[in-house]
Image (tube, rainbow, N blue to C red; front, top):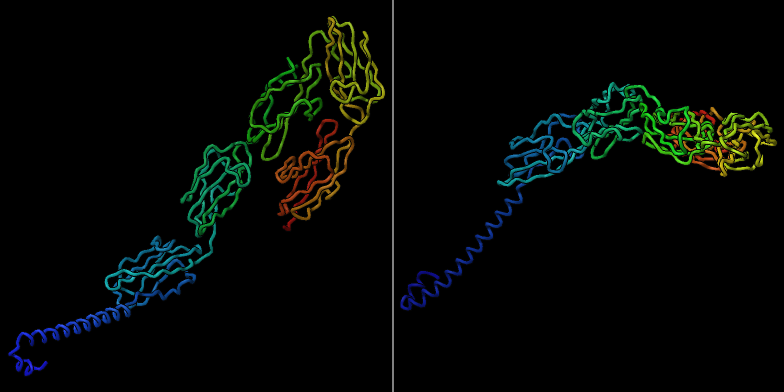
Length: 515
């Protein structure tokens, strides 16, 4: 509205001011709106031009060239300060933190060289606000697990307390040392997870046995290991039967047998039988105990054979002993042939001492305890009897000598070996002494003579079954899998159960050198 117009209407001042005022306030609203739009544009334009810094060197997602690296970045737009973090995880500064700087580069030393992932976070201070961008790199070098340094692998340990030391590896962040009686075992010791490079194991065995060490390393999030072997200090010695005193007569049909622990012995097994190496009367099975009570032993004054097995360095070894069985008072006792001996032929004359107050006798011979399959003398008062037509294949023959004492028949049992000899099973394939064709091998053998069962063992030493045990079988073949393929010697033991007694033949092979 012009001034002249406003003046010319001064006579109606109330209407003119109100009209002017309405136009004026509308004008103010238009101006305010224009200013607001201008400010929004300026603010948005300013924001659009602000930009955080960007890492340019080394190129992100590449492999670093070494432990010392210079990192370079752009200035960004509107950024006034920066920070560089380097770590083992996103947003971590485990390896490095530059602190707030205004420069566009920084040199970092001492970075890992194990091929692990390194996470970088570049901060930019833009308009008073910290912003960041994340990057990844791969550390230089090749990841590698730690290596045991001392004691040297394969050495003999000097005591039961040993300090083990190892290298840091490459990219390894945690370690765990296991010591045991077999590969990958920690029966003797486990350090638990540790960041240290040493561990002291106490209470290790001192029997000259093999101790297996496995050193674990956590490399870039994955557990890897190296295996080692050592020999425990001391000299291995087999356990020894102490009670009842060997070569004495038992006082009852029940007896408790006890033995020493030996040195370096891992387990025990006691066999009792009528012949050397037999277990017809008793077998304890593998045990860590140092005694066992046996009942139901014979009561005829005959010889009882004991074999005490000791598991030393994964190989079963044994000591043999003899006892005389308990004999009831007043019964006749066999004199000839001497109990436990082998007959010279199919015809044998037996003689015995008279029992106190015994008025009659009867002799039985058979293929089992208390059997009369081969011979019965019949009741009589004589002190001898001749049996004919006895087997001549080396099998056990069981004798029961009855005595009629004070109106009761009582007896003593004895065992003998028939004349001749049985033929053990023999491996026919693969040929003894040959190189095995691979990690899976089928073994075949003959039936032998009078053999009723078989068991094939394969191991790292004579009598060892570390690699394979077929278990008791009536078959004449067995397929072993997972055999080593490093060209080492493999020992085979083929057992034959002949007339109740396990006998064996040993063989040697060379492992395949091709997996």
